[in-house]
Image 1 (cartoon, rainbow, N blue to C red):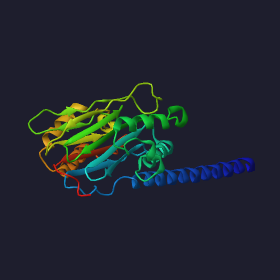
Image 2: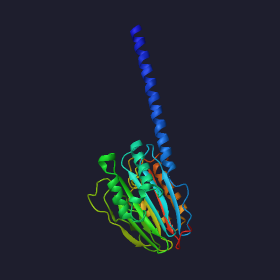
Image 3: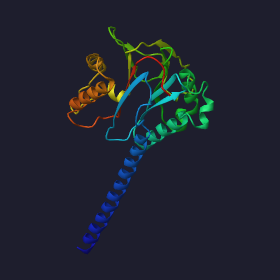
Image 4: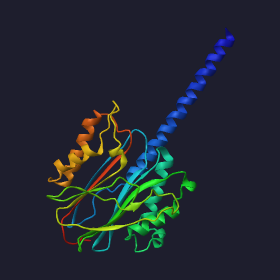
Length: 276
């Protein structure tokens, strides 16, 4: 009986220790998620030429989504969205590292020709600096630069879900030029494309948490349904559009958390140059 009582005490002590370790792990994950979310833009850059809105819908597990919008002088506005493979702290650490690498006031930016204004070169540099074997991670990315005075968007995509260009009176366009995921070490070259933009044109960029979205019943939301939703919302303000998408996701998930982070970025070109 005494032996059984001692065994029970040992089991209870081990269980308490396990619970304490689990609690510390959950606290660390919450802290990592907080740091990652703190890097997201708090408000759009001041611009009369662009109207910008976004939604970040985190999953239960900390993931690898991040985006940023970077003014480059008076008439250029760069932006990117990326999604690191996997979940947890390792994925979040890679997003933070890339964010710092691309931030305009770091020494690293001297390695990127054109001060971050050439998407093709940005992709090539990232592919060299973030090989899969070094980080055990790969990531997708879309990187674009608006020429606000000229009315052009130059972009390149690294295995990212193709953003949509919505133009009044025309079917939506998928922006597909680019190359493979980042991390393959220059296996294939990256392409870039320049497309004209007119006042009223809007760009929707998102991560694969949207295209791969499933509800608790395993039903796939699907890209076609997403494209149809965008067509119904595209005449409203971009902030209203982002809210409409978020509401649709919430309805589809019936209040549950998405299985993967979902990041949505909407940009409307209004014409003219940036105030900054």
